[in-house]
Figure 1 (cartoon, rainbow, N blue to C red):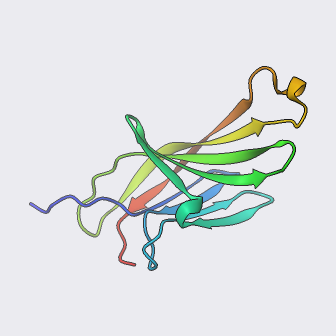
Figure 2: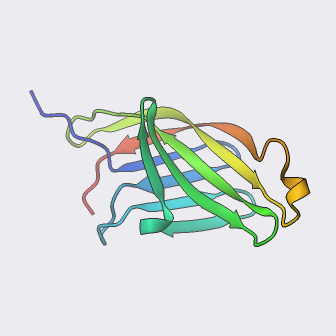
Figure 3: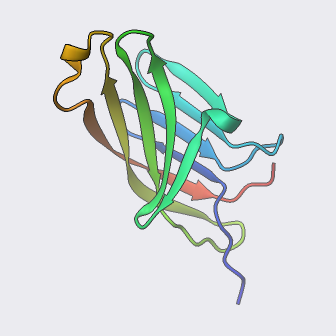
Length: 130
């Protein structure tokens, strides 16, 4: 029986989003590609934050940053997948866009400061040689 391998490339999408995440590339760093109708953004290394949780690995990138009105991040929930060698597995997961509200006027920072939008995503997980 072949030993299971962990995927290092995840490619997921829906009608609005196309996401590619590799845990390490030819340069040894993780890479994340985010594309929606108006933006195509690439991230690598320390621009990507990955946090292991009980429900999978939460991989986050900052897709918009302003000095005076907050920022927007996108997080991909990467599920645990066990692969056989040279196998690609279908996956279903979610992407979370978070608007981090902030104002330079302290009175405007009251209430909920993170607003979430959740997207269902599907695609593949595979192990590739970089």
